[in-house]
Image (cartoon, rainbow, N blue to C red; front, side, top):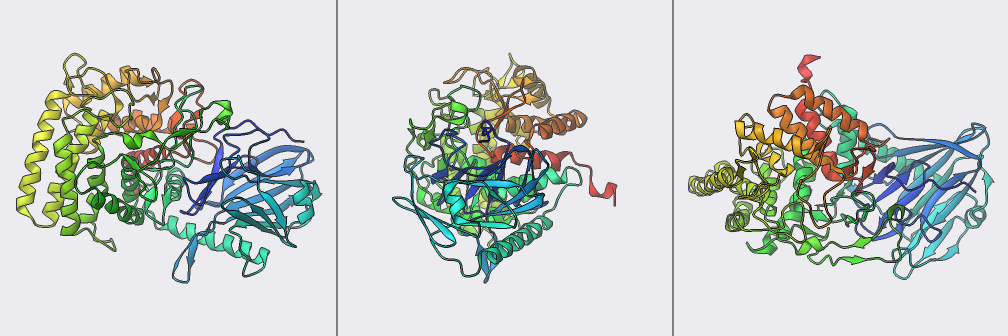
Length: 597
């Protein structure tokens, strides 16, 4: 029997904006939650590689090596497995997504197609889903061309033209023709198995190629931007419009750190950055979907407290618990379900809501532009931002045992008021322009005065504080301060001395609930790249960006963190924040198209 490789984040991502799956370099599905991103991981091998874990593998006899890459400009993944004699098979994995009968077709269906590349290889199918976070082994029933996995609340059906007896017995057999596997709800197919799989593949490839062709790409680093954009799109839960922070839970931020969190929810902060990045390359449909979800949150809040995150169905309660029976990624528990941060007060949330909505007041391409009605709802959010901007909170890094008046939270409260003034201008409401401009100016003056540390010659992480924090780099990105202001330049230099390990940047210098951070937080490195480009150090910014691109995995995707010594990826995956950074840096640093055309 082939020894399974140790868990790693060298994973391909497939999905269709309804669910997703992670596929390792040998073509094993090691993570997939159903019936939606925050659901039960029916394949959980990423967190439980033991015999109790669940996965779906095509195991080649006498396996020697593998290759994996995406069909260019799509979310269709190709994995090639070779034995020691050079015989091989190709696995094509995808989740169907295309327009059918006037609507987007995105079923809870995974298609896996196996074909021979060379020779006459022998292979076996290991198809071992589980339910209830791996605790429930399903009952198995079969038909002439299907297998059913029956759980307490769900049944999965795999339609296949492979020999059912060999699949059920996990027996090696000769692959002498193309094989198709279609896993989904317990329903019969309308057409033949091979015809369905072939049609779904053709239509899904055509959809993604058309989607990619509509992007407004920078001249340089196009493949990196395309992969980042597709990965961000796959993080959209299209049914409601929510955008998840990552597809996994409990991948540690650093080895044996205990910093294991469930990211399968919609953080309003992260979602804003996703929307902003996709908007910058002319993909505004995600913003329109997200604003549907966001306005439900805004209206429901009635101008009061808004949580930093919600479930993808707008759930408010995301009770955090530890699943003791799962060993965790590389045995590094705990495995958490839910996230206690829903209880936090994080005051940057109000600015993130208004920033995410701002373009809708100015962009004439949208199917539904923001009107006075949306503006009035958002004004209530702005009032809350002004009320709380100079009061302590947990901050954007979600510190569980410490509250301060965080500069980054006050900064986002300023953006709330500033963007409301600009939205009022678009709506031709001069009285509201003055109202919000006065409030923005009040907050800005307080930030520039009270977050400045004369001792550190930098903007500190909190009013009256001295500790440094990478999030103050956003001051230039959201246009609170001219990047050439000597105070901002000095801040960049101070942060580099304190927080950088070579090209990589950590979040903050002060110890938190778990001690001092060991790994670099990718989005902070990208904020540094942006700041360097703005203050005139563009060559250095390009150099660091190239280093970051080299830190991605084999299919061009980032997790949350990078270890500055080993270069290994840590933290939940794929991390939307990190993919946002890829797009932002490429757009900021690329040469213009008119230099070559």
